Length: 200
Image 1 (cartoon, rainbow, N blue to C red):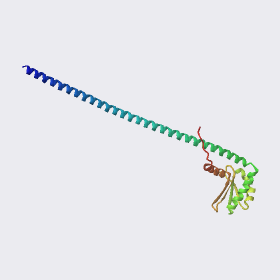
Image 2 (image 1 turned 45 degrees about the horizontal axis):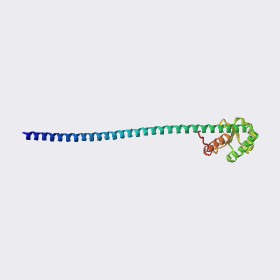
Image 3 (image 1 turned 120 degrees about the horizontal axis):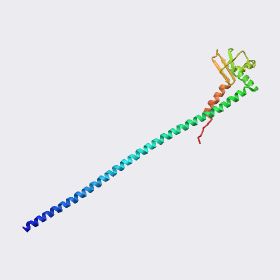
Image 4 (image 1 turned 30 degrees about the vertical axis):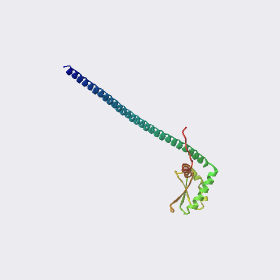
C-alpha cells in the first residue's frame, strides 16, 4: 500500500505543480492583458487628448482670425472715414477761397475770358450764357467779350461762379463754371493725391 500512497502523493504533487504552473501562466497572461489594455487605454486617452487639443487650437485660431479680420475691417473703415473727412475739409476750404475770389477784380476778368472761350466753341446765334444771379451785373461786359449776339441769364445750378454756355441748335453746352472746375479737381484728387491715413 505504501506504493499506492506514494503514487497518489506523486500524482497529487504533479497535479499541484501543474495547477501552480497554470496559475502562474494565467497570472502572467492576466498581467500582460492588463498591461496591454492599460497601454491601449493610455494611447486612446492620449489620442483623444491630442484630438481635443487640436480641435481647441483650431477653434482658437479661427476665433483669432475672425477677430483680426473684424479689427482690420473696422480699422480700414475708420481710415476711410478719416480720409473722407480730410478731403471734405480741403475742398470746403477751396470752395470758400473760390467764393472769396468771386469778389475780386480778377473774377470779372476771368468771366470775360470764359465768355471768349465759349464763343469760340458755340458759334451759332442762339447762345445763352448762364451765370449766378449776382453775376448778372457783368451782363454788358460778357456780351462784349462774347463778340456777337447772345443772351445772359441767371442759373440756380451755379453756386460758386463762372459761366455755362448753351446752344440749343447745336445741342452743346460749354461749362466754364468754378463749380465744375472744383468738381474736376476732386476727381483728380481721388486719383493722384496719394493721401493715406495711418492709425497710431
